[in-house]
Amino acid sequence: MATANRHDAAVTPELLSSLQGWDIEFAFGDATYDSEQIRQTAEQVDIFLVSLINRHNNDDEKMPMAV
Image (cartoon, rainbow, N blue to C red; front, side, top):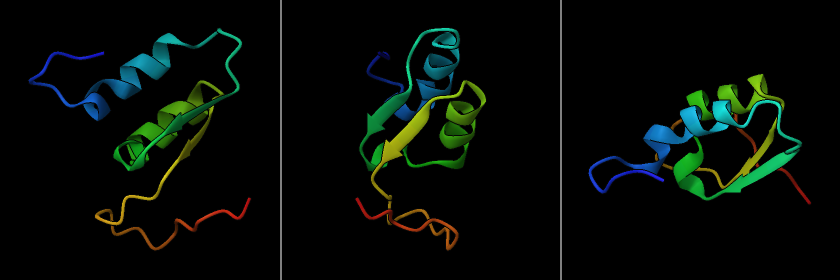
């Protein structure tokens, strides 16, 4: 997805944007993809993002969802 000197999460918004218009309803990711920018981009292209919570991000508004 990216060259070795770029982290996957750095190019994820661009990747999600390129999927606009595809018939993709949701995407799964690990805690690496738990960022506000990635969540906003996914929402803009109408993709429901499911990712683990990155405990290094101190965001009190995020709550784990029960399945």
